[in-house]
Image (cartoon, rainbow, N blue to C red):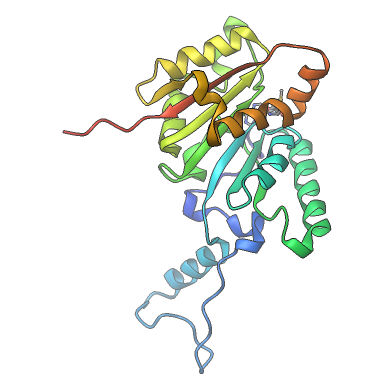
Length: 254
Ligand code: SAM
C-alpha cells in the first residue's frame, strides 16, 4: 500500500537539492544589514515559503526518469553516458531505493575529485500515481521502462505500468521530440506496451535504423546491457524485446 509514500504537492515543492546537492541553488548573498528578504514581500509567511522553495531548488531540471529502476544499473550507466543531464531513478521498494541511494553516495565520495555521479538520484515512489507531482509538463527528454513487472494475468492489467491513462501521463511529462524506451523479456507485455503507445495520439513508434543511430541508439544499447534484469536475461540467453516511442507534437488548436 501507499500509505507510507509521500509526494510533493507540485514539482516546485519537490526537495531536489537533497537529491542533487552539487546542483543546489545558491542562496542570494546577504545585504550589509544582514537582511536578504525582499522588501516588497509584506507577508512574512510568504517570504518564508519562498525561501524554503529556494532551499530545495536546483540549477537544472531532471530530464531522464528510469521508472522502476530496481538496483540502479541503468542509472549508473546514464550518469557517465549523459554526464550533463540529470537522471532520476524511481523505485517502489524501500530497501531497493535505499540500496541505490547508498551506492550513489559511495560513488560520489569515490569520485569526488571529478564531481562524478552528482547527476543521478533515486527516490521511492509509486510511479503509477502522481507522476505530474514530480515533473512539470514537458520537463523530461526520456523515460525508461526497463523490464517492468509483467502482471500478464487478465485481472492484473490495472497493475501494469503501461495503460492508456499512463500513456497520457507520460505524454504530459515528456516533451515533444522526447522518447519512451521500453524493454522486456515477456513477449505478451511487449505487445501490450506497443499496442498502447502506438495506439495513443501522442506517441509514434520509432523503427528500423533509427533505433541504432545517435542518442536513441545509445539509449537502446545502454538499456539492453546495463540494467540488472537485462544482464540476467543475457546470462540465460533469453530474448529481449525493445520498443521506442517518440513524443509527437500536439496538434495545433484550434
Ligand atoms: N528496471 C530494473 C532492471 O531492468 O533491472 C528493474 C526491473 S524489476 C523486474 C521491476 C522493478 O519495478 C522492481 O524493482 C519493482 O519494485 C519496480 N516497480 C514495480 N512497480 C512499480 C511502481 N508502480 N512504481 C515504481 N517502481 C515499481
